[in-house]
Image (cartoon, rainbow over all chains, first blue to last red; front, side, top):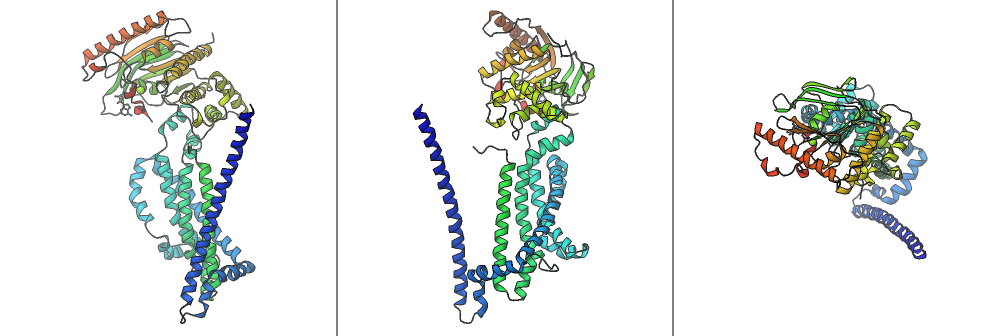
Length: 277
Length: 283
Ligand SMILES: Nc1ncnc2c1ncn2[C@@H]1O[C@H](COP(=O)(O)OP(=O)(O)O)[C@@H](O)[C@H]1O
Ligand SMILES: [Mg+2]
């Protein structure tokens, strides 16, 4: 009896140790990686400023100026918060639109061989056109610059969602649908109880790719026309020679992207029903 | 004994997968009494699964009619449910959700679903596993969940398409007993499709022998044995021998009609588990 209890107790503390070790390692990796990046950045700027003919303001590109001067300034003016929320709103709209259009199309492509075959070439063609090449057309066709940016995000982000959804649907076990039909599922129930849970993970995979594309597209899309958003702030900083702010914005773009992807990885894990072991 | 089962009448049933493919079976006729347990035995590929799918309304026939009770089968219905060779549970649901899914489709309130599900899980002796994810269960337990999922619908007819052939011998034997016992207790019809003569003898009141290409019912045998049926019982053994003989007579006369190349090699047995093409009628 007592040996069993002792075993359980030591098993528990072993697990705790293991957890602490793995978490400690993760934190270390995270910090070490960032530190290396920071040092490389600093070295790069330092190397450029060695050249005596380099303009005096080049030291503003360094991590010290960006993080200790640019970032606090952006925060204090509220520029940072405004830009993130403006770009975030466009990103959200564009992604929502991509999901609303991409998932149903993906389901149709996955379910119907005919749809898959007829849409393959046009979809691949469209996918390979740079979203930004649509800008002139979007600006002419849509009423506001805001709408144009949302459209550019949509036209870049919808493809991975369509393709991932279709791939997910195509690999649904046909027996699941047969069983559901056998138990009296109507088409709506088939969609919500069988097809959706079966493909949720794949849709999330597509969404992750879509967010990556959307985040890359939104910033250059905001360079022209708009008067808010991260792209606008970046452009503004360049024109006004606020190089510390410019570099701070670049850091922010990376951080926001990183956080969004991390959140999506979490959501993706939750949508997965496949046993990992 | 309660009888929830119904009269089963099949008249002149004919089937082809495509206009160009050969007849799967032709002019199949069948009648069964309420509560009767019927086994359809035959070699792989003779059209047993196709017949069962048509009876369940999962596949349209090419000609002929299926009447279950006073209803002509045109579509699937929770009144007659089918169990397949694999459990095909939904891996994103727990055991209880899988069992209750048919009632949820039917729009039952959650409380009533829970009651019925508990009852069904007791029937298949899985109450302890109610909260487990189905992926954590063994093959036999999963097939029990599939059985419970069918039984909660309180069907009139339970159709079984080689439901235990993927399980180990012990699990198979216990499920064969249990399914027959449950079906008899609640008085439903069983229609069992199998290529296992033992299974037919243990589970059915009557065995129909299907053979030939296109498939036909060649012969039938009453299996009037008392319950519970035990494999070692001499009466059961005798019945098994009779069914085996009937099966061989039927298949050789079917072969006489239309010689099939490569049939001789398995003249000693109808059990060709490995070669079964169960996915053939998927969809
Ligand atoms: N989806 C399908 N399309 C075309 N032919 C099929 C299909 N499913 C089965 N078949 C053919 O129909 C015949 C009967 O198959 P099946 O009903 O599965 O037989 P059994 O269940 O007796 O093994 C076989 O010759 C098989 O090849
Ligand atoms: Mg079969």
